[in-house]
Every structure is written in structure tokens, then in C-alpha cells.
Amino acid sequence: MTLTVRVVAPDKTVWDSEAEEVIIPSTTGQLGILTGHAPLLSALDIGVMRVRAGKEWMPIALMGGFAEVDNNELTILVNGAERGDTIDREAARTAFNQAQERLNQVENSENRQEKIQATQAWKKARARFQAAGGMV
Image (cartoon, rainbow, N blue to C red; front, side, top):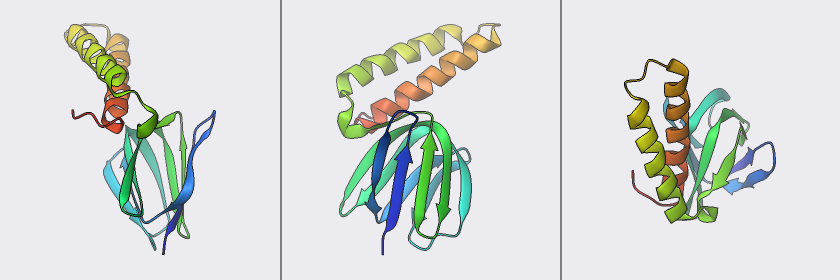
């Protein structure tokens, strides 16, 4: 048995295929989805989703959204998403390092909004770098 998995971003459908197993970054931690999973609605954090189709795992960087599981169908609606095999690893590494530097700069800042923006940019850069195969 397999799951039907759809990952839909505002500008494109990133994944629409069958899978045996999926791991998603929910706001409360990593969540594994297998065939026969109970119905579920979950908020998603910025992070890497992993889809196993056959013996291969496909990482997909998610930029937050929602996931719904019902009747062996997993529908993921996200603000943005990129398959790991379409991300330039070196460009992602550079963006991650820059985001890390920016986060370190604002760490002791009194400006709360600046800290939140730097943290969000760092999470997005980290997710893209991890999905591209970089270790963080």
C-alpha cells in the first residue's frame, strides 16, 4: 500500500506522486506518516520534509504551512517549497552562512522584529541547505 502525496505551493505543485513513507516538520516536531495513518491536520514549521518512494528518499524544503492526512492521502499546502535535487548546494551553503552571521549580529539587539526576521531567514536558509544535501 502507498500514500498519495501532494505538496502544493502558491506558484506550483512540487510533488504529486505515490510514496511509502513521509516525514514532515510539524510545529511540534518531526512526524512520520505511513499507510493507514489516522486522520490528521497539522501546522508545519519551516524545515525539510522527506518522502520515500521506492528505496530512495527525496528531501523537500518546506517554508511552513499545513498538512492533512485522510484516507491514505497526504495533502501539504505550503508558503513555498523546493525539491532538494533542484537546489544548488553551494549557493544554499553561502545563503545559510550569511543568515547565520546575520542572526549572530542581531542576537543582542533590542529590536524584536529584527530578531524574528533574522531567525526566519536562518530557518529558511537551513532548510534549503539541508534539502540540498548539506549537513547543518
